[in-house]
Image (cartoon, rainbow, N blue to C red):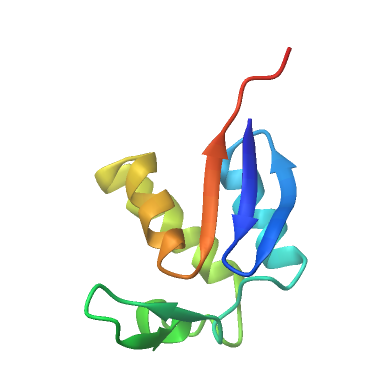
Amino acid sequence: MYLIHEENHDCLCVAHTVGSGLMWLIMNEWLDGNTIGILENDEEILMKDLVENSDTNPFLIFNHCVELQYKNGIEAVMEFLEKFGFYFNEIEVA
């Protein structure tokens, strides 16, 4: 399970998987094509600049992350989301 934090907020939710947490962020309008991210050189970027048409269909972000996970693993997805201020912290539940 994962605790999901946002840059300016404490814990937003708990999710069973990164995928279910990502879907929650999209469905609850925390993440869409107009979400601002920060690149390594401190340059601001919009999600729609990295995921084409995500400003009109935010579920394309989910598709992008599925492809990213397939190519580079789940850690790459979590690093991608960190650029937009979302942090997935794995926890154990008794």
